[in-house]
Length: 229
Image 1 (cartoon, rainbow, N blue to C red):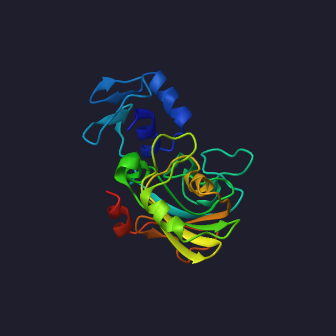
Image 2: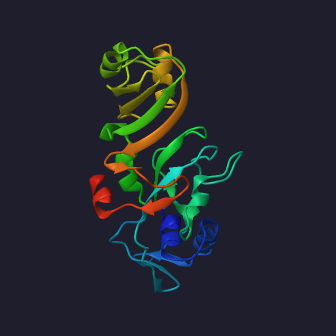
């Protein structure tokens, strides 16, 4: 973990305030003054500010039901950040493990544990994510086999990893994928000549949105957290 993030996780200082404390030489790691905010520290390091030993708060693992016209960002832009919905201390210090577009609703996971969220985000971990998809045109059953093999996305080399497609109605499907390429779900359906008109993420791994109301959040259970370790 970066030393500036460690300080924020152990005190009430903001990231900018932590950098100022570092710059003036008040921070020591294992007895040595550290001024570079990017310095990495580990659990067995002793970090202090003016002799006061710092202990980071417990990592937080949270799921959010993302509404339309919100963004997965740590700052408000054209649309507000979903972190505005998370009523915890220093919510904007959390990061988002798997982003959704402004026009997409559904399950988003936020945390301050970067190593843990890597198991969700990294394509090598093949974490399954399930989306409910509404389509402009009726879908042919042949798409099930095409997605199972993988489809060729425009501008990409090679096929996508296999996707599991379940047809609910002729213009409504469930799609489970293990990658997170840019706009992947929309591009997969475009590759077979269809268009996504509505998109909603229902689950990530064993974490399911279930009956969590729109715009609400909750902490993950211990079992849900352990699934991604």
